[in-house]
Length: 148
Image (cartoon, rainbow, N blue to C red; front, side):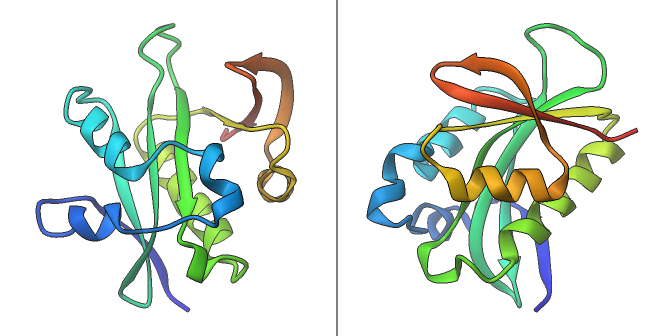
């Protein structure tokens, strides 16, 4: 299965907002429509569609940390795979592609967070190399990976 990242554009944004989570995952990530709206007002956000074999199957959004100004620090703060395409390895491939893109944008460290009861995504992040930082922000556990 070929997984790739593509920009969310005028041509595919409606497909992006139709992606769905499992009912029990609803509170774990903000809606894609809300995320896309937010990205229109934050020019440093990178809203990105996840494709598998030319079908949109997920969404990921990341950005450099402009609040602290720490050079090379990025955040992945939206990540979802449509419920019909979960548990196929797509998420892991997509995250690795996003990390490669972030490195190409000057990223050296990437932070990501998860809701404490989302053990599946926590395991995915650990497999990729993220480690807990000991920080909790807005009730979510923060993990980080060093890209250097």
